[in-house]
Structures are given as structure tokens and as C-alpha cells.
Amino acid sequence: MDTSSNREASAHSASPISNEDAAIVARLREARVRVREEMARVVVGQESIIDHLLVGLLCRGHILLLGVPGVGKTLMSRTLARTLDMEFRRIQFTPDLMPSDITGMDIIEEDAATGRRKVEFLPGPIFTNFLLADEINRTPPKTQAALLQAMQEREVSIGRRTYPLNPPFFVVATQNPIEMEGTYPLPEAQLDRFMFNLRVKYPTITEELQIVKGTTGTHTAEARHVLKAEEVIRLQELVRGVPIADSVMSYAVRLVAASRPGESKEIEGVHKYLLYGASPRASQYLVLGAKARAILAGKYHVDFDDVKNLAGAVLRHRLVLNFHARADGVDADAVIRRLVETVKVEG
Image (cartoon, rainbow, N blue to C red):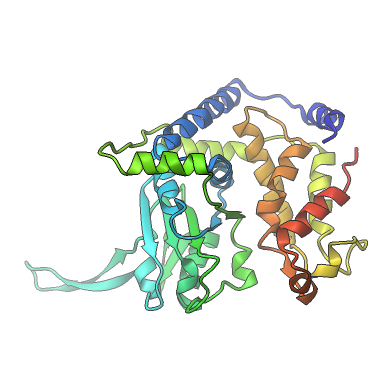
């Protein structure tokens, strides 16, 4: 990484920050440390995934977690919701799940005193702050769409009425990458609704030993609250105001644009393996995510490393690979690494 370019980007992006916002940034930096500490009481390892979850939440984005059963996806989500004092609900997606099982439904109730009947809306589990959509690809597209509409619009329509979802509203969906039988893969347009696609890996031997020690005894650890939901909303508002130099924003846009075969200069080891590249939504999320990552580190400016660090999470599910990639054993991560190596920092 060219540190001189980072220093230049920082200098160009410097702008006055109010005392109130400076205090909030300092509070967030402290809170990030405390969140990690509280998460570590329950979840072993996975620091990078936790950081990405925080970035996604601050950007009002949603996250797709890929990982085999038993690596802690549910535990991690529930514990993070607790540390941020957010209402948490989990939906186990199954082939027979109906849209109304997620969104809720209108029911007819009779007043015992008057005998009159009236229609009442019974809210579904989507009316929460932190929703875990477990194995989202196990339910048909119609039910998937009920969730994804709420993710995009942050509201639910039932009949002729529309109900807003209370902020903060954060969805973490999970998928098992090794078991595809009986599943309904999300179409590319629906995958694009997720800000990040994160791969939850196996723990190391040391981490797994710590997990086993902590879960096979009599002591049960529990995380404590660090932030309140109201503070999370304020931090979400602050993220969009974080300055970013034109050179850094240009780099993010050029990085995404370089993924589009036929519309950018041919890149060896990239375009050969792609049918389609990422849309402008990837550029938006890359810039927003870099802003959130910066203030999580206690900075009120964005540098090139912030963009590079998030490239894989933002682009992984937005690149459509062709048969050459399958034949050569090349995955999206390999293509993204080549993109980051090739697209140069300018300015």
C-alpha cells in the first residue's frame, strides 16, 4: 500500500468536524473495542466478520453469511444484537414458509362486549431491529421476495396498507455453501440487495479448543450491552457525512467499473472469467462501507486501504463467472484479488 497516497487522501479530505460529531466518533472507537470484548466473552475468533457486521449495520446495509453449520453464525448474530441492545428475532427458512409467516397478516377479531368484528394486523417477526434469516435459500422465491422487499424499502405492504419498519432495521441472512439439494438459489438481482457477502471460516485449532472448553462446562458466558439502538441510528446518520477525497472515491468507482467485461480495458486474469461485472450499487456500497470502516477506526476521513479492505465483501456476490472460471478452478475471490492488484491508485 502506498502510504504517501493515503496521507495525501487524508489531507485532501480533511474538513471541519463539530465537537458533537468528534465526540461521537471517539465514542464509536471506544464502543468498537468494548463490542469486541463483549463478543469475545461468547464468540471465539471471527473478529473480521464482526467488524464487517458493524460496518454493514452503520451503512444501513444487510449481510449474507456463507458458512457450514456449526461455525457460529447464529450465535454471532444474536450476541451482536445483544451488545447493541437491539431486538433480535430469528426465522428458520423452510420450503413451506409463506410470506405471511414473515411479514404478518390481517386477522378478524370479535369484540366480546359489542359482538362487532374488526380487522387487525398481526405483525410478523420481520418487525424487529435485528433479523436473522437462517438458510434463506431453503424457501421459494415468493417467500424470499417478501423479505427482500422489506430490506430495500424498509416497509411492509399488507393488502392496501403499508407499515413502516422501525429503525434500525438490519438483516443478516445465512446460507450453507455445501448443501444445495432442495434449495432455491437467490437470483442475481436479489443477491445485489445485500451489501456484503461474507465467508465464515472454520476456527483454528487453538480457537476450537477454546470453544470446546467454554461450551462443555457449567459456566455460560453472556455479553453485556455496549450501545443502545438510538445511538446506532445517530451513528448511521454520521457515516454519510464522513469526508472522502475525490481520488479515493475515483479509485472505488474505477475498481468496480474494471470488473465489467466489454466496457473497460481488458484485464488479464479478470475478464476472461466473467460474464457480468458489478453494478453501480457496488460502488455506492464500497464508498459507504469505507466511510463506516474509517470512523470505526476513529478516523474522520477515508483512505485507499479502507476501500481495498472491503472490495472482496462487496464484489464477491456481484460477479457472474463463466464456464472458463469453472474449468480453471477460479473463484470470485481470485478475480477480485487480481482486480485490486491491477487497478492503480491515482492522485
